[in-house]
Image (cartoon, chains in turn green, yellow):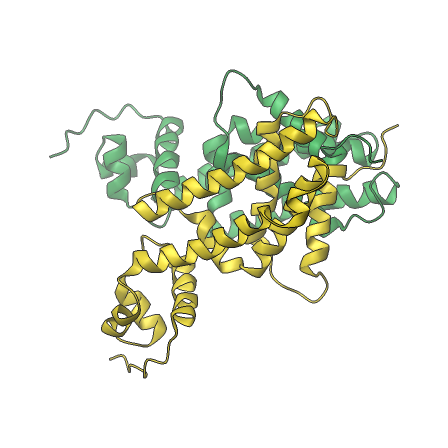
Amino acid sequence: MTTARRDTYTPESLLSVAVQVFNERGYDGTSMEHLSKAAGISKSSIYHHVAGKEELLQRAVSRALDGLFSVLDEPGAVRGRAVERVEYVTRRTVEVLVDELPYVTLLLRVRGNTRTERWALERRREFDHQVAELLKAAAADGDLRADVDIRLATRLLFGMVNSLVEWYRPHPGTTPGQLADAVVHMAFDGLRTARP
Amino acid sequence: MTTARRDTYTPESLLSVAVQVFNERGYDGTSMEHLSKAAGISKSSIYHHVAGKEELLQRAVSRALDGLFSVLDEPGAVRGRAVERVEYVTRRTVEVLVDELPYVTLLLRVRGNTRTERWALERRREFDHQVAELLKAAAADGDLRADVDIRLATRLLFGMVNSLVEWYRPHPGTTPGQLADAVVHMAFDGLRTARP
């Protein structure tokens, strides 16, 4: 028997529990029963807060997407040379990813079986597209190497950045800012000193 | 009712079907029933070839791991400056990944619930470790930028390379060799032309 605790959840704190369960079991593999157990409150208490698990998913991926898209409106993303803007966006994307780790993790694992998942995939593609446009503008300015294939570079850049959700764990040695610098430096300047 | 077809499988061709099912359903989510349906032969026919699904997993991830580890013994990986060797290994890793896409995909999704999965994770870590050692040697030679954190660079490099299993699909425009060049160029030289 589960001892239900008094429902002291806010929409925010319930979301945080739900996202953890979604990330552990997968969204498809999570039932309202699982959420009720993890939160320690009854299913009807959960329904008091949200219409169902899809609403929780929608709120969670919105939080990740809002964080990412707001980067594109920051002064560093809209002013200056395109190459500086795309570096800025890359740096800030890493920081948002670290700040909102469970939410972005969920976003990146979404597969597209429900309306909300398809919408999230569509928004992710739109974000990637905007970064690709910045890379294209940087190439047109002559600031990217002539042999860079923009489509491929965009994929590899996000491959590098998004891999953080698989292995990054906060630790005292590295701040999110240092992590972001390492990503930008590697992607834009490369690991090598000048070639002979 | 399933119409069982005559068992004309070789260990190789049965493995190829199994890997596809594992990648679609996840290894944990795959039963002998699923494998039997996908292969169109009875479970007892499958048991004629292998002791069970863990043996199929073991063969599949071994194929990926053998491909990756054999790169480390190739002349380009053992002779010359460390930075050239690590670039060579990166390039060949991408090629192996593309050549053995379903097998490496499975390897990268392994989570560690069974003995075989834990073994596979251990071997992956060993491979990453050997690449990290090459990067360390390249740094000691002065061929990597002084600010490169080797541990972080190894993670980001594999993040970039391994992301291929999520989005790469063979298409006429890009050969595996061109893809490998793009990865090496971005990781080691960066996307930018010289900074002002």
